[in-house]
Length: 60
Image 1 (cartoon, rainbow, N blue to C red):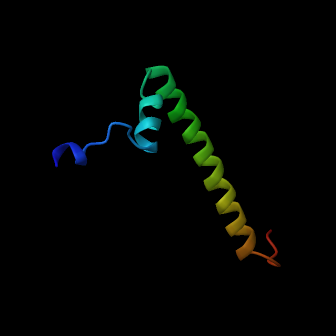
Image 2 (cartoon, rainbow, N blue to C red; image 1 turned 90 degrees about the vertical axis):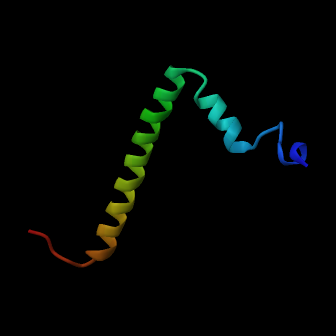
């Protein structure tokens, strides 16, 4: 029963983890790229929300 609970292949996230954590340079690049792309996504979302809420409003 114990051997049935263990998997040897791993899942998608385990494979991704092994690829990213293999070298420090890959990990740092992944973190920096993720921060940049995350910032762009949040900026885009906030901008669209701002435009949606301020349609027809004059700003001085």
